Length: 349
Image (cartoon, rainbow, N blue to C red; front, side):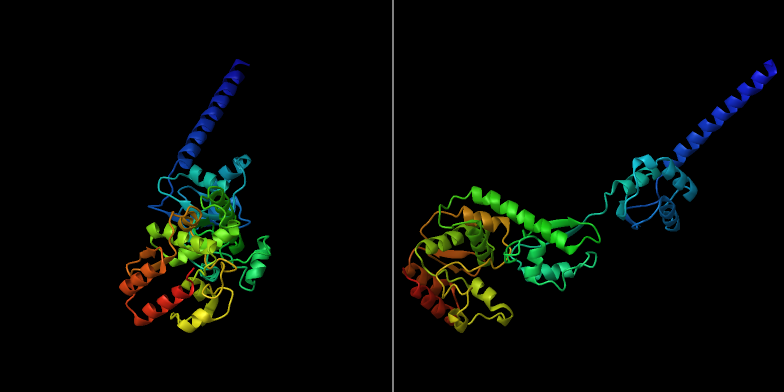
């Protein structure tokens, strides 16, 4: 009996020793770093299993342990969650445990798409279409159809998306990127409208968005934006035509060949602010935050005119005589001198 107990104790000791050794081995193996020198990207396909992931990693020589051990450990820790499809960034120093935790986390690689200030919706659509890693679903959709998908069927798409850099995962649907940009525009306009300092010249945030788009297109000079906005606001108050070239160009659409002619300034269309005495019916681009703030917190002043100085900035005038002098000084083209003088004389208060 005593000998049997001794054998049993030895057996138990052997089992414990084997378990400790196995645990140490598994722990050592799982702490092995994956063989990557820098950023490496690994795809987990939709419907993939731990076994198929292990085989893929092994094939790419990214798994420093046996595929069987990786599979067994994944099955043993299945309570930690399932693996998730997507594109993952593998970084130097990551071990096998980190790798398994990563593909369970769903923290897939985030790509970037940037929409600059001043782009039109057509340019947004072209830019989205040019990204091969985005899932394209909008090729056959009209602009109106896209706004319907976004839950805003009565809105014209121009101006309805905030220019910014957006993150997306590979394979994300194009409409979802637009959805985020639209929601951000709504949030920004709500916040900026509440902090406006321009009184009641503009009746609502949409009018502010229209004017901000004009400011965006009229100047890229940061210090001039507030005064450009003030010129337009003063003209609206006095019922003077805004006379903005960018609105005319937008209204011409594909007809515009890069040369704005005097004949264009007398054409009858809703975006011709040389003919109409109000804001155009929609924004003419996607204005950025600087143009929006400049519009709603416009610089003080009684300016009614401005003219480009040729260095990216503008000269602002209080009356027509001062403006005509500025035109003669800064506009070198004979046509520009004559046309500008005629244009602004016609809008004299």
